Length: 285
Figure 1 (tube, rainbow, N blue to C red):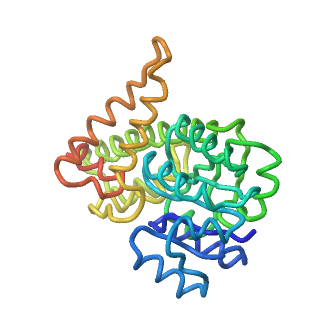
Figure 2 (cartoon, rainbow, N blue to C red; figure 1 turned 30 degrees about the vertical axis):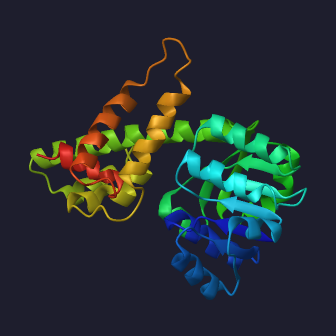
């Protein structure tokens, strides 16, 4: 499908390039024009002048922006010019309520919507190996799936609109727990005076092995937190998780509460743009 990408940050740029390699990319738009121009020149595709112009020239519109307000703003801009039958795919991480609201706005124009948050980090976006959690109509997904396979190794329909975002919330809570466990355990090992590179190597091969340890274990030990998932964005995601359970009586997220407080401390210290492995700064001896 002729696909336009809106939002060319660390994740969106990787997706756009993989869509181009698969022959699906029609063009791009980004709030910061320089990035869009770079991708357009690199791929030989269209540099659209506005989201509305992009919508009028594409069959599938892929959103990859940061926050709920950004998603709704882009949906409002593409809705008037998107033709009936166009599919809007939102890969951002927002609330399930925002996904449902976006779907309602587009439905008035006979434009379909899928909430398709992804997991796998910047590395996954570059390699086209993301895991995609989909909320929406199965028939709509069937039309878009071949295109989405260019950016995701796994595309799973979770349920109705909003359920993709609810599933991503599960993922983000687990990421917080893994971050807490890995950083605390490595801090303990360092306090014991162990050779931590050897510790990471051997532990990664056993029952405690995980993606975060493999990809961030050694970098956090040397204060290299430049690559990956920004701490302030994970803070935003965990805040969304809290909002989503606000109406669930007696349901709490103590691990999320702890992580939010620690992230806030790090953000106050100026580390909000670092990878979430910056949590090690608070744990290490």
